[in-house]
Image (cartoon, rainbow, N blue to C red; front, side, top):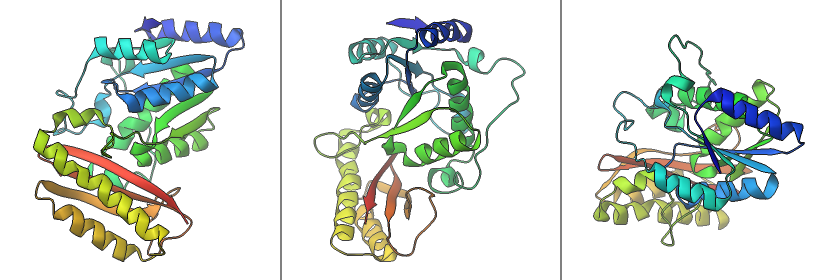
Length: 281
């Protein structure tokens, strides 16, 4: 496995792989790798000849009062896990490499970024779309792999790829959870033991909401009422949002139909966790 810091060096490697006829799979991350990230690598390695992972804590997707400076980092551990998982190249750029002096260009995906996490984190998806667009231009992957835990991000990136006629496939991969149901996240490390126990209310509530739909409930308000009441019963939980939307367009729904996304963001102390389930009817 090679580690590359310069865009020009990575582009030279990519060019040589493409000349050899090899397919490129790409896994963009912000590091502090866990089994969720490694599951993306496994998908990429199974479906491509050459796997590139980026590790870049992107400053443009963090708000002024968010956790950029304290975002967890463990580069040595990341390198070991990535190599074991089958990554061929890690792209590890500095901020000055991605956003050099005088940088002025940003990508804005409209409307679908104004709901859910976009509503409570203004500018977040502008930063996400910008850095992912740049990474796609650098890596030129055939397929790029994203976890469904960030369901809105998947929808936004798919929209950007369609709208800008990018020649790659976006591959969403299932959420990876701990044995007790908690969705894996780099931010879980912030949680105290008590907060982590309290956070289990997210997955248990989502799974019950999914069962409500499977058992015939179609009223969105009834499902939302259950979710809000059950999660609020956990004293440590501070709800940011709970919404039920069309899984492909993120449009709000009054009645459950076709393919729906039940998404939420809840704070435990200062730690904001997101989780979701997708249900097809």
